[in-house]
Structures are given as structure tokens and as C-alpha cells.
Length: 157
Image 1 (cartoon, rainbow, N blue to C red):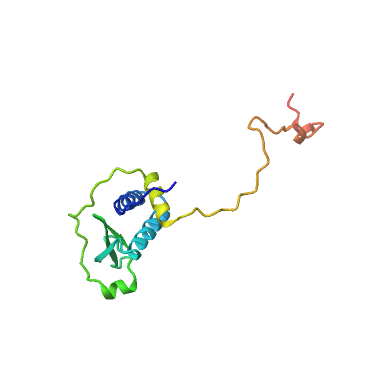
Image 2: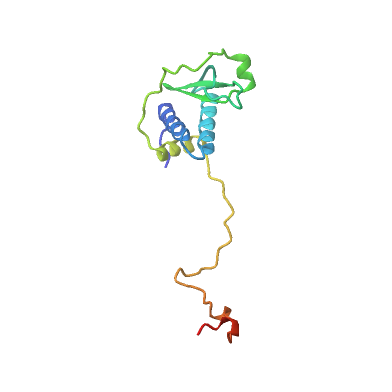
């Protein structure tokens, strides 16, 4: 069942995904779907490149730039391409005073919207070999492992 996806919905979904990615223990997937969504929006001319910003988080102490993209009334940063450096104006340092509008959207709803838009399907992982069923009540007996008859060194009576 597909719903009409608006640019505003997508912008809110990407905002929600980005907010969660910043605190996620393994944010790679969230950042990847954010980037894929923004790239598709740019390709379809539903988002616009604004310019380049210096990143707040230098990699290995080297200053690097990020691409500022406007989607509806939200702004996002993604890695720039070589062409972006040639064709876009560098805006200098990030403006800390600017904030995106707040939105109330769950991460699961945001992912649903984005997955539908970018037509994302989870990778089919090969099923691990089935383990043999063992009851949690089963305790292997140690009777067969004891030395019988007991040797003289183990007699305790």
C-alpha cells in the first residue's frame, strides 16, 4: 500500500533519521539512507545544493567540507562530490544559530517513508544453519564421565 510522499514528508523523515543517526551506536545505515534520499531528491530537482560548509568534525585533524542541501524548509549536510567544489560557493564555517524546524515523527515511520521513496529492500542474508533443538530443561548427565569403579585415590569415606 503506497501513500503519496510529499517533499515535506521526506524532509521531515530525513531530519528524523539524521537526528537518530547522531546518537546511534551503529549509524552507518541511517546515514546511507539519508544520503541516498537526498541524492535522489537532487537528481529529481526536488532539492537544491546551497553551497559548501567547513565541517564541525574534522577527520584526522584535517579540515574538510560538507555539501549543504535544502529540502523543503530543512537543511542537511552530505559528502560533496569533486564537481561541487568546482561549481559551488564555499560558505565558510557552519552557522550554529540556524536550526531546522522541529518535527514529531518516529524513526520507524521516517524509515518507512524513505524506504518507499528510494525503493530500498533489506539484503537477503543466508539463513544460519539450524541448531539442533535442545530443551532448556535438559542437563547432560555426568554419570557416564565418572571413573567407575572409583580408584583408591578418590575414596572419601
